Amino acid sequence: MRHLLALTCLLASPALAQLPEPVAQLPGAGRPVDVEAYRERRARLSERVGDGIVLVPAAARRDMEAHVLQDGDFRQDDYFFYLTGVETPEAWLLMVAVGGATQSATLYLPPTNPHAVRWTGLQLGPGPDAERLTGIERVAPLDLDSLDRAVMVATMRSAAPLYTVMYAGTTDNERVRRWMTSGRDVRNVVPLMDSLRVVKDALGLTALRTAVDITTEAVMAAMRAVRPGMYERQLEAVIEYTFRDRGADRLGFPSIVGSGPNSVILHYDVNRRQMEAGDLVVMDVGAEYGQYTADVSRTIPVTGRFTERQKAIYDLVLGTQQAVIKAVKPGMTVGDLERLARQYMSEHSGALCGPQSCTRHFVHGLSHWLGMRVHDVGDYRMPLEPGMVLTIEPGIYLSDENLGVRIEDDILVTEHGAEVLSAGVPRTTEDIERLIQSAVQPQATGSR
Ligand code: GLY
Ligand code: MN
Image (cartoon, rainbow, N blue to C red; front, top):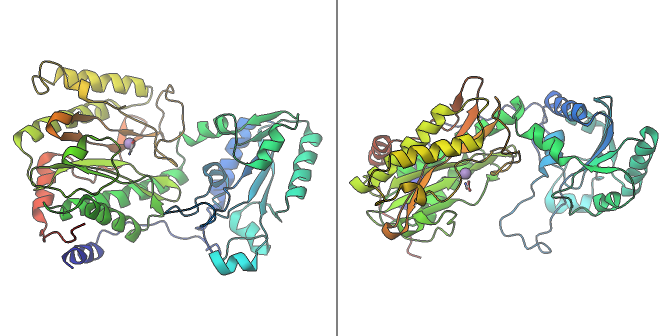
């Protein structure tokens, strides 16, 4: 009951995330498509393709029984979504690029099936509205034989290669596999699309900012709710409740809420331990919105007060993170940032971790690209450019002391430096202590 009260307080919070305004509602699943922004994305892919046919399938529908789904809803394929914004399962996009321009684009949508509508609701299907709502010139009812014929005609007419989606040289789509073994010039569109995805456009950045804002609220809600005796899963519940309440579509990845001995386990997501006074708890979480995910970590004391030892380790991690964030600018590489982080931590370790530097307890990488995936696509050797988004997340994990600290923010590379998208989440020990202590702390409930 008390826990419910805490959730009710969250509901009343005035700082509701500002969700982008709908343009025109799609039937059934799916948000309105910003048709100009998606046309621009297809145009940029055509520039990269030059002359070629591009064939991109949507994700397959999944069945609750056959695929034993626990908590995974349908999620569109990232490449298909990137080019269309359409969330209909089992659709296809066929594009023809000539001389670096999109000559034609056809969206194949499965015909509306009244039986499926009964079970899973209305999806965007072929019909007079679909062209207007998606901004794709031609929307045809999907029939795989006519799709095959259209691909064949397009490849014969232009004698250009066929670009399609192959993950690591293969694919799980039967149709695509058949094209790969057809003896035609079939190439992988993934590297071309990854080079687009790694630099965020305005559309992607708006979704990403929304995901980060929702995550910011959720982590702050967890800081207000934490108290000794609470279970990790209850903190997870506050975070995930806030995600959905503020408009998140789903989790970007399983929420990590690791306290005490679990704070040193990098990807601990069991979240069943009861937290005790004196513990630190590492929360590493991300809401997904519009198919883009945030990824934010904070480490907080369960009592609302860091011990001297915890504060010393925390401040070394924070100092490292801030030194790196200050250094971010176009032209640097992720490798440069990694070296800088380790150098800073090493030079400032003193005797904190014994005779050796604390860097030997910094046991994961500093950064990864962030976008449609939490560990997003992109070549890590690329020099940073404005529009790239990466995490900066140093950590120190002292297993002997059950003391783990990770601080992670989401960083947008700008023309002259960086913008911390997750700047709204408290990160100094003082600010974290103040927020935790400012909250009324009811007793824990639940005993399992
Ligand atoms: N948020 C989990 C990770 O970056 O690995
Ligand atoms: Mn991360």
